[in-house]
Image: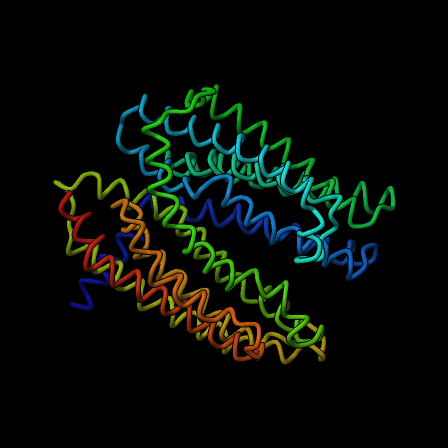
Length: 422
């Protein structure tokens, strides 16, 4: 049986799935490498406070993006395979139109209630409305990228991704280094690059793909809400695990612990990079196979996915253990303790890959409500600010594992059965 599984894995490695994964990986590596290359430059012009303000803006923008986009990207990508162009056009048009309308309401709220946001997050109230603009451009860009991914166009995908990163960092160098601005220059760079790429994505949606019209379709709106709203607790759980620490870790621990965590996160992030690139190719390949149930070899697919679910956690542990060896070559002696974080962050990123394996079945079956309970329950249980930061850290790593297991369970019991029977 093991030989058969290895043969099937060898066949998979020579498929278009791996070629697409490689293209996505190259693009992701370039996009991730550019900020690291410029880090020694920008850190000589920006203060830690400047970096903290920009980091806080990222946390807020992620929340606003969920409010505006309502997590409709998976539905839009899924409906690409239904071969109903008019229904797909109504869905995309409704999603973007809804995001624009909601963004206007958010801008008004942030203009009036910016002081509340500043008290809660320490982000300057005068710049709060700008975050809604960044979130809207991000929703438009992500919608276009999800369609490029569904259409198996990895080269266009990474071109847009790299262009966005390059433009962002180029404007940052101009405004921060050449002109001498502080965090405001960095924020203006984010806004400028977001607007340019957002307009390019709008052109792609409306002209190239012919999927965007200024309209709101009631049926499409119901589909978006029924699909996206159950995913909000699911998103909040992921947000708490990955982003919320940036808001409260300094208060619960110390700046030194935050620095160690950040270094550990950056060193462990290549695992997430590889898994993310593989998932970008895995989603359209999986959806395409599931949509053609007559030619689907269920046993072979299950064996391949099982092999991946076993290999990923092992890879995460080995990477984290190896970090103790190569970390001294990357950081100074004061950051050697980051190795403890790398081990568990590496395992957490690997378990996220296991979650992707099973979670995409649930997305395909459109039964996203199954993902909310198991994921969000553990997220909200662990948000008590009285929990010490290291307890919070260990629990969050365990939480990612539980989330993967819960989605896997629901996939076997509900989503997987639904998919294989369609």
